[in-house]
Length: 257
Ligand SMILES: [Zn+2]
Image (cartoon, rainbow, N blue to C red; front, side, top):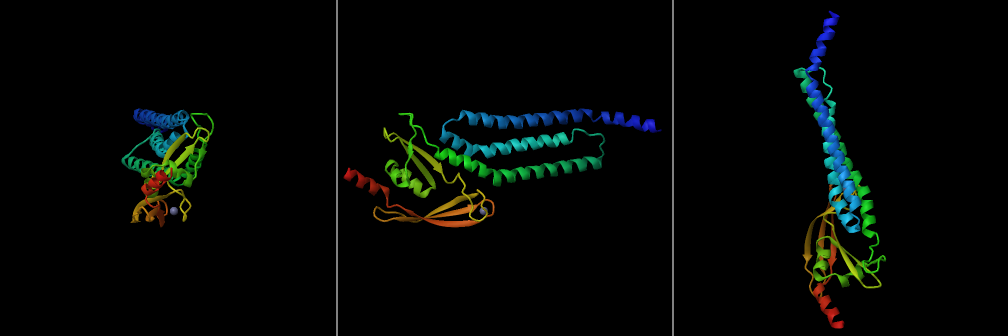
């Protein structure tokens, strides 16, 4: 009796072998794909030497790519967890599907939270270092100097200055002191989050901008920026003074020159 019971399951178990094999293959395939996504990102980082290009690439893609890799990895893990099936009934199918989906979802949520709220601190540190890393002058091969907000205005055209004022756009101007060679880099405030004053996460972004008063040639204008935190929902408004129309400034500097 005991022998029969022991023998029967073996045949019974065998019928799950094709599924188990396939589930393992799918798992390995997913893990390899996830590893490739991460590896591809690392290679791309290594190949992107220029600080500003690196900045843009990290800012735009790093968290997105890690999220994709994590999802593929978790799907692989879900298959692996079901690659050792010995018995199956309707109830077991239900239990397995339910457990797999819940565990997979929990794992995805944990990763999502890490990437959304903790990982940005690490990204931010690297972005800051890249933004302020001295640019090398192609003329002399020596480090250039980052101009201050006041100094840089002379090198930004009217459109750039208006953008800096209104669209949360930041321009950095690097100058080679020897040859006066100038390199201008553009940074977008909408793509880049700040640290939230309420929860301290790096999730505080400009969501809307309103011009309260349009600047004229002689008078300053006023701009209202609406910020919102993507984590705690904290909202804040900030009024920014818009410089008197820069065209007037350019005319002035043209006449004095
Ligand atoms: Zn917050």
